[in-house]
Length: 343
Image (tube, rainbow, N blue to C red; front, top):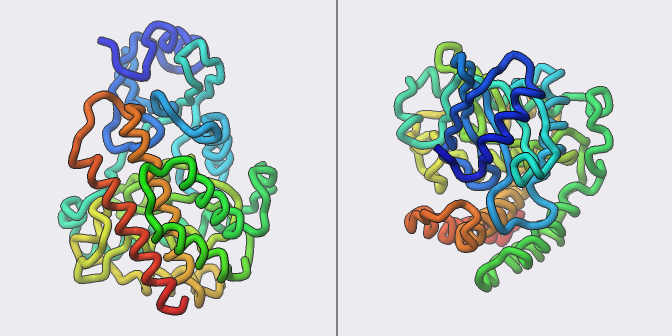
């Protein structure tokens, strides 16, 4: 059976020739939930499972979805204590599957990406998982980028300045409508950039919904979705958590985060734990939350635009489509409220 995004015969031949320890035929199934790069579960004839990742179908921005870059990052992080899947191989030959792809080990765990899943955890589990999420982030930010071969990944200084310029430009490339709130947020962010304290690996999309969690150990066993990773200001990742994180009563704006179930530690507790582990000055963290909301609004608009262009498949779920459209407006409004309050 054919599956969109997979050329069965040439991909099977490439896997047989390049990946040790697996053997076709293979079963490919799209892992639901991804809204950008496409991720497939692959099972070989002996039942071994691994994961294949490729760019979305159709219209994409020219500089997005670099499989070789993502593969390089995960391979490098895999040499550290930060948990990531082991990479198995990279195919840069477009003739195999009409686009580059890479494969990595399957890691068993649960993706905590909804309040319903959060509600299945005990209060003690919620606390343990939340604090491990912060501890893993602190460990990631402690990695010596030169020692792991990522020193040339990006410029090191001026991260937020570059990011505000990048996402302002990307808004112009991806937007499907005019939203003056976005323009005002971009202006306010550019006018009040905090001084960058240090340089680290910046994941760019760090949250429970992009991690695999083992509920026996209550530990993060794999950090996923590295396509936005770069070098930069570590507080940007911590601020991004604040966009998703609901307060302990479960009041939050992101429907795809487990903290909406309530009973998790507060965001301030996460910030305090991070500060204690890293020694970073976190007094400007509200700015980073607003910056992250702006950035996520632009990313959401890009996903919305790809749906409209058919890049995510032919079957468009109107509820999902409207959800991304509305999220852009909600995130922009939230960022603007934070910035107008004097941050």
